[in-house]
Length: 171
Image 1: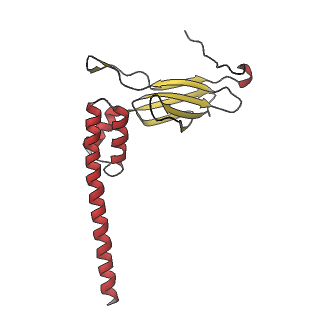
Image 2: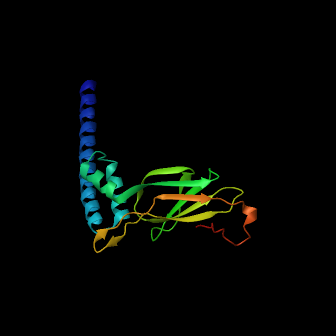
Image 3: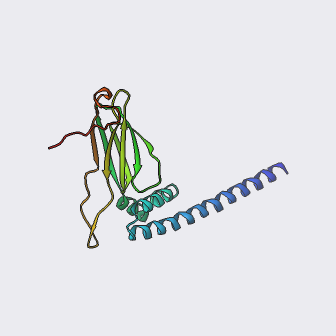
């Protein structure tokens, strides 16, 4: 009798797991279709976020991989000296910055959007740089992407007057 109850309980658990899994797969497939619609409307960050959520369930789906490839790109953030804490905030996105890591930092997939990169290191002035990853379109055609690399030379905090921001010279 005990064995029969255990077998029955095992069958119920397995059936419940299978039903939940099939529901998760169905929702992931709906998310892939939604991500493709967002991509068609050139809503790259939203398409990437939707596809990334579906990838948790269906990581090997070819349609999903295609959406992620079109809506994201790698990024590299470096500082001199290295070891600066990197924060990202999406321009025209949800308010607030996220901790991304420390320099040198390579991000395998970042949604194609424009970002404000903030680099902080004790003893150095905070550096703020743009990271433009959003695609640009000309007459319906996507133009070549800009660099996905940020480099910042950090300046000792004592060399930057209070309330001022150091602007690195260029050529």
